Structure formats: structure tokens, C-alpha cells
Image (cartoon, rainbow, N blue to C red; front, side, top):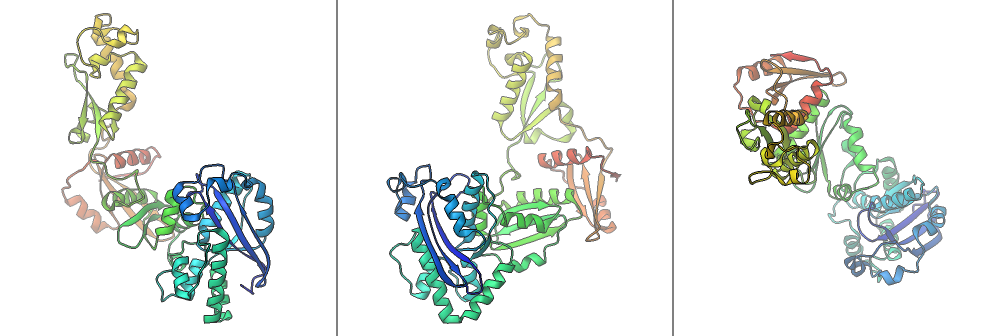
Length: 464
């Protein structure tokens, strides 16, 4: 078995679930080979310290009763490390098993570094004409059987039987060639071709992960594209999202930009246009709210919650804060009133007449009870809202922000007006077209915040 490797361990784990951050190992089995000859065999149940979900017990046959007296991972870690130290670790979907092992060792304060071989990817190399490369598909393909499917040693023995069947069918030289090739490749998900890495530039841009269809799984950005993409595939699967992306990704696309600002703008736009499955933060929300301060003392309530249709840069001097829900806006206003002893009734949080409930609790200075002058209360309200005030557009018209990437010799100018991103152009002709076109401005809170951060960095601005 892998006769070209001085030492190799074929391993399988059973766990309480699919996320190393929360789930734990319940069973470990391995067989160690030295230059293809079996030298050691070891297996153990593991007390995970948490309850095994019923559906996992139905799948594996491992119950809470079976593991209650089993050793913990900490108690078997030294023995396990003795078996795998200095070896190549092979498993079916090795990223799953390796990710769990790294997480468990990390909890003990140790760092596990291991060369790995994924036998799913090995199957893809050896049998590219077949679609299925999971253990069940391999069992059917090679006519293999077991009475211990989804138990650790049962699955280890299945992997070994499949490798032996492949050796008989294709010859040992073909197996060894594929193994050497896999050891040279980066640790990528089983469904992803490593050849694409050579094409990704390590400059700024946006990357898109796809599964089996044209709906993106995930969209991200970086100033070092290749390194960032690879970081997704060399992590420890510390979240269930990373685990699912690793399982589902089949294709990667990328779009280069001239700098970080271009990557941020493009990422934000693509997420809002294409609704990737695993992006949440930058998706366009149909709801947007802000706090509008009355222009005079006689307008009660003094603060109104306004919606997206009323939020435009022309009236930013009267607006405070941007919120994704009316509840969030109300909670923010309540906190401002509480922290500054303002009257919740006068500013519009509480209904009714006369003294407010907060005044009865001595948490309002009493404008509602005639104990504070309305002018003073209004001034204190304006001061309290001050840090939340939306910034008016500080320029007379459109501006451009230029970025240049020396490695790709790419130059881009990002055109803005009234906090809105109008276009990104790469040459003079494109800039002329933008300047000659009247644009329907649509305010986007993410662009507003992004451009503010950019301008605070003393970014060079080109008046247009």
C-alpha cells in the first residue's frame, strides 16, 4: 500500500457532527504502513464530552452509552500522535478528518502539521470517467462490501480494499504516479482542480466560488487573490460555513482590480446582484431606516424614523444613523434618550401626554413636566445625536479616485457623486462616457461607509 512512501497512515474518524468548532470525535481507527507493508493497527472509541445527536447514532451505531466510559481525546492524544507522527495521513475526504484532528490537538495547545493524501481526489485521478467518488459509489464500482459502514475501522478497511482493487486494475505504477502528483498539489477540496491556481494572480481583485450550477456559493475580495483563495482551502474548518463551502466548491472565477478600493466596490456590487449562498453581510436589504430630527421645537415628536425612500444625500444634514430595521432604529434612539436623560415622550418613543414614565423614575430631566426648558432639551438632543449625523457630500460635484497596480499595470478611476458609486473606468474614453451621462443615483449604505473610510486615509481625490 503506497509502497513509495516510507510511512503512511490510513485513518478514519467518526464524530458528533460536521463542525470541528462545536463537534467532537467519537471514534478513531487507523492502519499504518511502512513502504506498503502493514505494521500497526489501532482503534478506539472516544468520549466526546458532549451528547451524540440521535441521527448521528442512527448513522454510525455509536451511542452515548457506548462512549460514556471511553477515554477522552486528551487521554488518547499521545498514543494517536505516536502512530501518525512523521507519516503521510490518508483518508477519504482527508480535509474533514485532518480538520478535526487539528482542532482537537489545538485545544490541547499543540499544533498538528501533517502531509495528507485525499483518497477521494485519488479516485478522481485514477477513475476520471466516473462521477461518484464517495465510499458508497466506490463500493458499488469495485464490488466491495462491509458490515461496518460508517464505523471508523470499517471505513479504513474499505479504503484499503479500494486501493488494492485499483492497484490490481491499473497497476502499481499508475497508483504511485497519482500519489506523487497529489503530494505535490496544494490541499484543495476534492471537487476542485488544482491547475487553476497557476492562473490566479496574487494581486487585488474579487473571487467567486461556484458549486454545481451558476449560482455563486461565496464571493470574496483580497489584495492578494491567490493567497486569499488558498487560505480558504488550508484552514482548519473552524466554522460550518467553511466546511460546507469546501465540500461544495467545484469552480473558482476571479476578476482583477487595480487596488483595494476597486475590490471592495466590486465585491459589494456582485454580492447584491448575485445573492451568493454563503454571503450574508453585504446582501442588499430592502429596508433602510434613519432618524430625522425636527427643524423646530413645535414639531412633536422631535425625532421621526424615516425609510429608504426618504434617505438621500440632499437631506443628510437632518438625518442621523443608518439602520437595517425599524426596531434597530428605535433601540438606538431609546439608548440615546436613556444615556442623556432625554424625554422619550417628546422625542417620539413613548405615547401619551404629561410627564413621561422615565421622569417618574428620575431618568428624564422633565421637559415633559415643565421642569426643563424645551430649548435646552432640544439643544441636548441635537448634541446627543451629533455623533450619528450623516455626512453631507463635501464636494461640488463628481469626483474620481485613481488606483494603479504596478504588477499588472492596471489603472482604474472610481467615479462618485453624492456618496454614490457611478462607475469604475480603465481609460480616458470610459471616463468621458461617464461624465457625459446623467446617472440615476441610488444611495447604498455600504458604499457610503466604504467611501468615508477611504477618504479618511488622505486618499488623493480628482475633481471631475
